[in-house]
Length: 178
Length: 178
DNA sequence: ATTACTATACCAGCTGGACGGTCTCCTATC
DNA sequence: GATAGGAGACCGTCCAGCTGGTATAGTAAT
Image 1 (cartoon, rainbow over the protein chains, first blue to last red):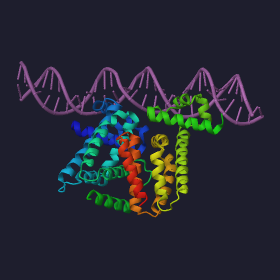
Image 2 (image 1 turned 135 degrees about the vertical axis):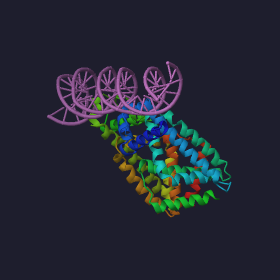
Image 3 (image 1 turned 90 degrees about the vertical axis):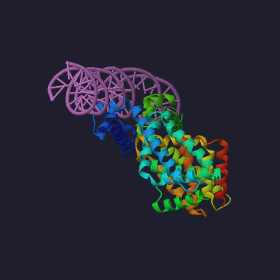
């Protein structure tokens, strides 16, 4: 198996462990088993636990950034295109987001500095959203609402019913179209 | 020292460790030292690590619920009073929120079931907000935006400047007043 | 006598990481 | 075209160190 695809397999294994069994069960042995390789093999690809978590964060930040940039670029309407991209990618790619969440929790637990790739991405999105042709405060509230959706899902604190979620999505879309 | 105040001291000690040193450094010994008691003394009050984290979550859920209920009750205007209470308490009690965040992270790491007190509180707030006299979808978006603020602070992903934060707060207040 | 601790010692269990092998491929030389 | 060599991708074992929790003996105040 190629180096890069095996590395991504490992990241998925790590994410699923965090999601299903929690951070304290994110051990190198458990990740290796989940990925179907030995502990030594895992350490060949990621020489430490911190390197593994760093890989998780970088992978998801790149993935997410790329999708948003693509969406914004493909949008025929200039005004509000970044806000719409942020909205659409977050609402539609729910599976990817769950991976993202796992990376966030892992990085926060292991070493907060590992969140830097996410911080950089966020800073960029916020800048784009504020210079998107919409009212900056309203656009920021929109972004915060989208993040709030994540928080609910990340902590399973409050699951919004699918119907209400769609209504919220529709209303936010209307705002992003002015 | 009285039983209850010593127990709260311990919870604060545990919270500060999670905030400052991360979940993996939340050891019984570290909490005891931070609280200025022996490990045996800590285990006298909280017989296990799980009990300690449970105490953190329950404390913050009660604290937060109480404040929101008081605010809503004291509001002279009926329409939107729960939404305003949720908004004001979250924006103003920033120090308490940081304790809250630590409890969330700890519970998520140790055992997701420990988040139940928060889930119950959230379910109640959502119900009140939706029956507050405001448009339910808009009120829900408002709640999500407030939660999004937490997420930023919890993960230090993106710190909104104080000025923008106040503008957001002002706009959300306007919405909650219709 | 009970409550609320302190201080110290102890232990079984798990974990990260080190380390030394192994098994393909691919390439270069003879 | 055969053989050797080396790199890349992995395996499996070992171990020092830390952790949660238990246990015990004592103290000081109520």
